Image (tube, rainbow, N blue to C red; front, top):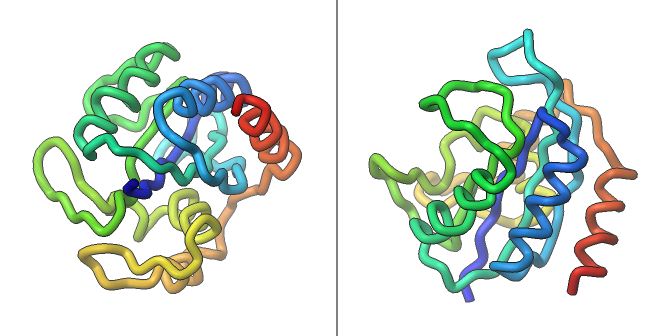
Amino acid sequence: MPTAYIGIGSNIEPEKNIQKALILLSEKVLITGISTFYLTKPFDREDQQLFYNGAARIETDNEPLDLKFRILRKIEKKLGRKRAGDTPDPRTIDLDILVYDRIVIRNEKLHIPDPDILERPFLALPLYELSRNMILPGWNRAISAVAEQLKDNDMTPLPEYTEKLRRILKNEH
């Protein structure tokens, strides 16, 4: 079964919404790993609440477009996510496919791997934690090199919250 990595973020009741999103996701795919979650500043929006960000490693037989639109977007909608274009507005939950196996997709509906991995530590470091030897498809770059380049950042680890999520998911199965 293909392995994919999902970026997870929230800055509207993040403790509650991330937990709910992971439980809903676990009903549709097999979650095989959860990265550390971090408290992060909003990207390009200083006037917003801080985010919780992390990632999940999953196994799924859903194709990338189905995963994005039939699973991830439905979870976002169920948790009250309002989409206003591609603006960095506050969000109850944000679920993005970061990497899907060795697939490279670049079209108007989907970009895999997510190009933001190369610029945003809150994507690169959780991805590195979940797959230390990954070579990013299409770019032929080691996630370890990307993570090293982005390691000096303003992210605060949330170890207690991360462990709580791992315990809850373990009990769900």
